[in-house]
Image (cartoon, rainbow, N blue to C red; front, side):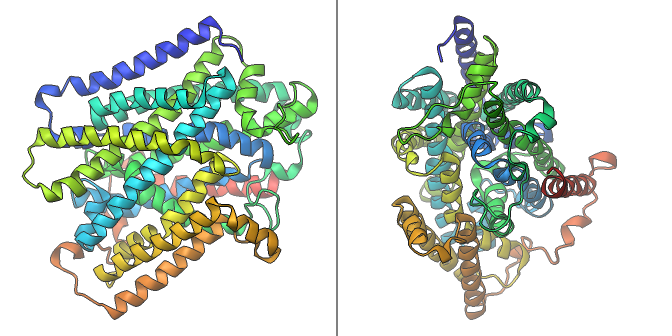
Length: 550
């Protein structure tokens, strides 16, 4: 696609505006800079900003591009990753956020130390840094580079380095305040661009009726039977998603750091619920456009997708294909800016969390008397190093079938031990520190082993050789790993018991109903009312898009 002058002006203006806004957010507090302000925005964040920032950090170019690719190939099946998220955001709001705010932790590894031990904190810090650099940042940079190469012919490594440099600039200068401020703006741009593309394509295909008559009816459903071509049957979603969802939304520093910066407990609860409401849109504006693209091609309203070297339709080009043939000049630039907004918001959030983890959980341990301003300097240096490592790794992300499947497979292998340790720590008073570190180390080694088998394609060859094991999708494997970690956690806690101290006893719910005893805000802003309404809404959507759409 050729870049029109108007589109180019819009894209350049966007880059200048976002980088300038981020740098301004940091420089205006330069003279009174404190570590708490740099890493946690001074704990002043309110629920709308938290919700928007959570959504923006979660949604990257991976979602805009790869969910459209999955929509074209598999219909709405991969929308499960979007619609299961509100359930885990409810868990964050009800059970985890209160402990995080009450314990006044700076990082989630800090919370793990208060509940278990220093060893658990150090291990989680290391794993969180690895996941931020290689999952959140690496895959996002790769996906963004694929889009820019497909749309504008820009060399992939050039795109990776340019985007990383611009995003790293304002993240290094501004810290978390720059991140959440730019993310709030970027979320609006992202949603605007995605909604415009969805609305134009939906109108062109003839609405829901025109879509339904042009595609296989099963593609309109979200929960699929065993053996479905999507490779995502219903049981893999129900078994695997709670494992990766709790890790991602409730225990991952990159995501939860926005909650840690909340003004108070109520804002920490309502912010995630607001993000859950926005996530409802994701299936309609990220996955559905890919399916609409397939319908438009079937109707002959737009040309077929370009072919890959093996003669198949290049589904990875779905989003850029729709932009090229459906959007007018000027709007193309806006949607391209939305793609960059999605990418930069995820990268900036992950970079800031890496800096926070390294500075507070690793560096400050060895130098506890470090001045505030030097801690900020260490954080900035860490941000730069993390960015460089991600740039080096990102080209290797192309080894997976699709970028979206690759990032979720990586999450499935890293999440199980962390999820088990956090859930046991919050809900089971007998969970011990020795069991925690043994579970984290054992689970991480098992996860790394499976990841390497998948990365080298040996796992896929095994399933081809023994079809009886085809049910072992990455989601099912995640559940199996979590079950093994759960056994290790329980057995080792019983073999190595230890009494709760006064401090860590405050970080265990006495019963699952205890967190619901807090009254919260009165009226429509009450977290219990909003949690119930969000849960019922998601259940209704699942019923409709499983049994009634076809």
